[in-house]
Image (tube, helix red, strand yellow):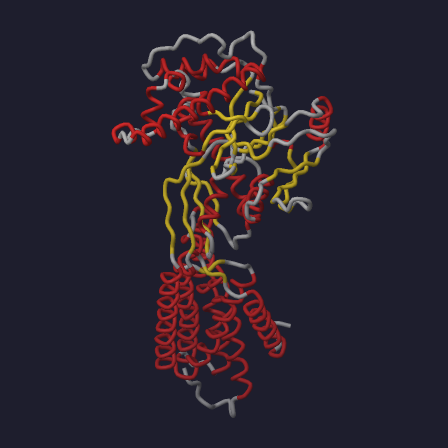
Length: 555
């Protein structure tokens, strides 16, 4: 088939039609530098310096796989996610429309736990001890427990009633003092706000932590006013307070505040210190809406082993609460109304569906082995990418025009045949990039223009060899055949060595270097096909159509 002129023409037409189809159907994918996007460099967070180099490298490898899974499910076209060195992850997302959302998904640790909500008895008994620990840590004097205060001999409900009842009395007392001062017209007293009154109130001064707690909606839950959450969290972080918390109990904040009346409150849950199930046994998660209450939910599916564990725990704790904790925040703590198997759901209230979809995505992709922090971040706008595209197009057009002028001016009609072959080369390169879904970058455009020069170089070698053969006295047909055959080895050498270099660049390079290597590799193959096969076919067709054997060759 290669030996006949019709067969060669059929192959060329078939290849050009195929390249044109892929170019029309797939289009060209532009890289980060051409269409804009986000560039991130991440490292495993180790502020305490407890990770060994080996442990940090292993955590980076695990994080790399998790991030790849998340980005694949996020739907970004042609993302670049790779490890650089031993402890850094490089991410490039071209054409991303919501960088903040992608960034949140990448950084999300997503450690899922299921913990039993604990009864408040022991914690309520320990509240006076926690208050004294706060005062001691802050340099105050530890108060002496008053008679009738919550103590070991009181039942939990009575103790809670006493604490919360005392808070209501304190609030009423402060309000009455302020109203009395205003009624007397005592501007000095009226100017004292509730904070100053609280400072003189020994009951409140003796209870810096418990005074912030309000009775929750269910057993094992307290409510803290949103403006007091930072203060309460500061108290709970004190080592003295941590040592005073009863064994087997850990305190977790709710993920979001809830409204009660005109105020916002944050839930504080008493949970078991160890989870009975973690997200390692989770197989699937999907976002949806609760049909009864129209809440946003994430439905999850556990593995067979996870289903057995969940079923065993729920069958023993019917009527109790189980907290669903994600990244140390309680998303929901539903009551167990019956034995639950491998299916369950995380309630997210009135959160937008996009948040539920992101959470489901992160849960499916898996939890990061350790938190990540961003060490480098760049956002490339579409305008910069458009400028790069215009400049690249201009450079390509100018380069091709100069090549056309040079070839036609120096080689005349043979140069025109080379330009026709070069046009086929351009279509084959663009079609090849589209067929392999390769990403075209600014360095890739440079590789494309470089391969144009290589395609012309192959034609130059052939034409010069034909000139030598004709100058040696050969006939035109014999000189053309000899010129193409004798130049073949030099063309193969130049193209093969450049292709090997391009493949090495692709293997060891990253980002733009790889884009350059891909475009150059496709261009080299197309250049070889154009200069050796297409141009030679055009010469054979020209030789068949010559008027006479003695007509001189325009070369």
